[in-house]
Each structure stands twice: as C-alpha cells, then as structure tokens.
Length: 90
Image (tube, rainbow, N blue to C red):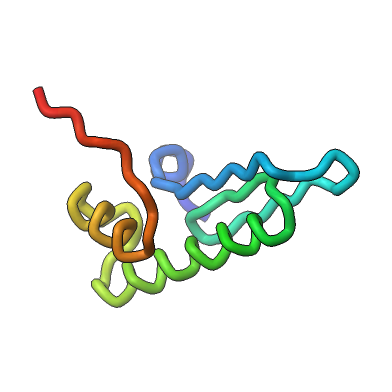
C-alpha cells in the first residue's frame, strides 16, 4: 500500500451518470485510477469503456494519470471524443 501522504494526492477520473431509472440499482465501479457512480446500464458501460481507453492511451505514452500534463490530458480526452470546458486564461 502507498503511504498515506501519497495516497491522498493521486489523480483520479470521476464519472457520474444521472440517467438511472428510479427502479434500477445504483451502479458503482472502481478501477485503478477511476471511480464511476450511477447511470443506466448503457451509460455506465460507456463510462467504463472511456476510462479503460484513457488508461490504455496513457500507457502507450509510458505515463500514468499522475504524470500527464494538462495538455496531454486534454489531447487524450479529445482523442476519445470527450468535451472539455474552455480553458481560462489570466
């Protein structure tokens, strides 16, 4: 296990699905560096697929999520078809 100090500052992908019908159970998936909560079955499966593909792309670059720069993160996200909020410039 990682020491407590290192464990607190690890980067994670967080997926939240809001389209779960009321009569379904709550889906929760935890992976190496992601947590997914909620969503209908297709939405949850889509979030799982995106997280796995994101990790595969980071590994192709010989990096972990903690090692990616903001530009690399955005590049992978856009490659997977994710929408990013506009960057604020000061």
